[in-house]
Image (tube, rainbow, N blue to C red):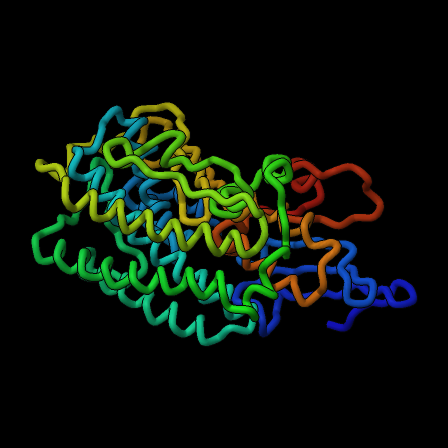
Length: 394
């Protein structure tokens, strides 16, 4: 699409949803005065898949594996959030060994996610060598997850009432060896992102968000912690194995893109420590407890810390073997506001880096409809949509 001129030297530059530089479909409009961005807007909703609605037509076990498909990078944490919420409704608690294994796989998944993000962010900044190296090292953790669970993407570790995979001595040794290698590589990456002149020029002082702005905009996860926001569900409301294996919070005060790099790399070091701690003190005992087929009627919320930030699940049961309602609020949805609000004042060439700085996932938060009608001034409700014959799906 061509830019629309709105004045001398001022244009509206549309990007997406079909664009060779974007890995997922999202439509952005940047108002620019020369090279400087003066306004920004985002339109999501291009990859809506109806997963929440689909859960209402499946039993709890089927729905949990459906939730793993919300996001391929953080599939385990989605299944964990759903399992924890369902177990709360059922009045059961998974055994300590199962809870520890949930956290173990969760930290391996966090390593996978952060290394993937490092490569994508480096690529957006034109640093393709770092992209290739980080994705090469990412294969190490993917192989570890495959050896432990049998899968490289959707791990299917959880069941309602526990887990279905165990850690034997051979797997333990393989994980520890892989963690030792990745820790060495992570120290190398920290050196690169804090000394490489080209990367520093693209990250230092770019996309700065203060702690006050992070609070006002509702930033979460590494994006918020890079601005000094001390929020992490693993610390604030420990779940699964984090009650027995506490997390040390990682924050930074700079609030710029470099701080978001540093926080994620230091979180990798914390994940390595946690993994060793869990493997050294893995509780003995069963992997599961018996769960009822029909979940008692009620409603609950479940909060976990996904690699991108707080993941929030609302689950409502009507007493059958199928959930009546499942509502998912993903971290990307919370962090979009920071991109739109931070964009003005920076160059158009900075936008890919500012966007990648929140580690966005389009498909995991796309559950919306936007209606443009110049004749209607008020916001449309779902009833308004129905009256105008517009079909919608949760």
